[in-house]
Length: 176
Image 1 (tube, helix red, strand yellow):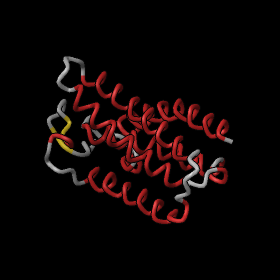
Image 2: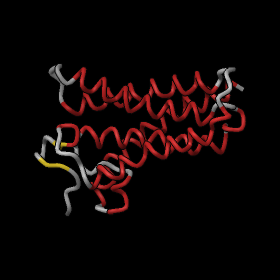
Image 3: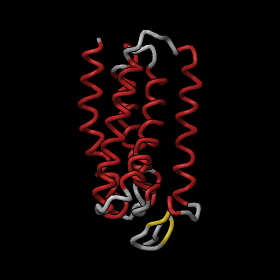
Image 4: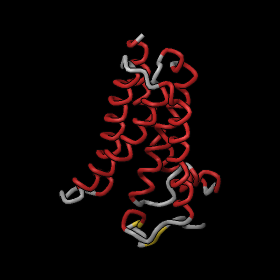
């Protein structure tokens, strides 16, 4: 069964990168307000982490229908994966921001590295013999709690560099 799980995690990685790109441009190209919850509304670091999170979250929802019954630690592994993409993306972004690379290159490296780390960690948890399934509702609740700040800060960003679109010298949604 671990081969099936590995295949989902590996192929899912490709799908996540494609969805990440789509979420990056969807609001900007359409102006559809409902997309702001999941898509980037500006070029801030926060918005790039948001689209990485939701790209991975979308994969995990699909995986829930196909492989969760084979993995006793499914939601635990996915919660850890979502935390890993957030932390890894931010750490790599800030580590590389001192290097003389264009913003978009740093962003792409940080995002893809975040996805890879998240998928590796998630896979290791999914195939683990240690059973964490007794707390499944807690893990699902924690995933939901991770979503809330992304929704809130899309409309009410904190005035710090994490939320600032440097290219536009602005925060939050730029209404059309």
